[in-house]
Amino acid sequence: MNSRFGWFGSCWLSVKNRQFDSGIALVVLVMLGCGSAPIDPTLTTTIPPTTAITLREALPFPIGAAVNPNLITGTVAYRQVASKEFNSITSENHLKMGNVHPAQDRYDWTGSDVLLNFAEQNKQRMHGHVLIWHQSLPAWVTNFQGDSLAWEAMFKTHIQTVIAHYKDRLASFDVVNEAFADDGTLRPSIWLTHLGPDYIARAFQYAHAANPGVKLFYNEYGHEYSTKRLAATVALAADFKRRGIPIDGLGLQMHTNIGQTNANIENAIRQTAATGLLVHVSELDVRVNQAKVAGYVLTAADAQLQRQKFASIVRAYRTLVPAAQQHGITTWNLGDGDSWIPSFCSCQDFPLPFDKLYAKKPAYDGILDGLK
Ligand code: XIL
Image 1 (cartoon, rainbow, N blue to C red):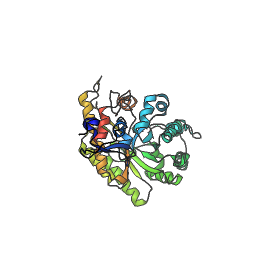
Image 2: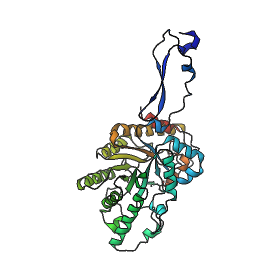
Image 3: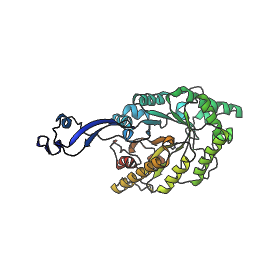
Image 4: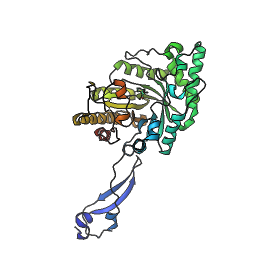
């Protein structure tokens, strides 16, 4: 040991900056045994302090979050976490029909503009959510009067206007969301009533015609607990392939909970990947208070179970989806205080990787655990 540099001084042979695929520059210290040759002391004094790796640096596929323009604009910590940790964002609500198309002759791009500008500033991909859904319908649509041709024209115009508006600035879009019921049949909706059962296919054709460069997704929930819904989604992909209907990917929302089995989650991901389409875990959150216990607070034990479930989902995605089909994993917002779950279930829950002050929870480490 060379005493001039202390206990470790003579062992450091080289320090290299190496660029990895994920885009992170890591300081790699290569220790090749203790030689007797003198070592440049600057090597040991210029090593920068280690900083925690972020999700966007660590993950081998895009990692996203659904975000909200009011929080992006108004909450510094939210903005920082959204830009630092994620390389993909989804508009949680502002491209839904009720927000973006409030009157038949008027579109409102205010919210989505905020998000897209933010994404571009931070070198993030933006995923558009959603063109056709049975919820978030503006009153002018629920009250719409017209024959089947008028309905078709209204449907087509909405899809094509939103798709074309941002040209290639949006990478991908959920074209249709939640068209199936739990039993795998088509969900009754205003669209099914007025446009007939093949409306899903036509939505994709209209979207593709408006911009063939945007990746088009069918988005659905419950694949991990409803085998019929999973089968219906897989059958839709096969039918589209047979008929030449343009579709690029399937979104698995994955609003799940710590009680869900890994086997069910893996089955959903495996069968979706077997379609050959892109696979997007599109709205991930993991509930801990499935029993809706009044006044529930997150316990250390449940936080660990949540960490394990995030890890299992990331691991299943990484190992079961071929790299070329990995569109990424998106969490449904950032912090527990922003989640839609408490208002949806009328209960206390803590389903996201950050707490309400945007500190990392064990669930955050779970995402990284999934890489191991
Ligand atoms: C939810 C949003 O998170 C809420 O803010 C909003 O009030 C209702 O919609 N499946 C979807 C998402 O596809 O669009 C939903 O988002 C959650 C369930």
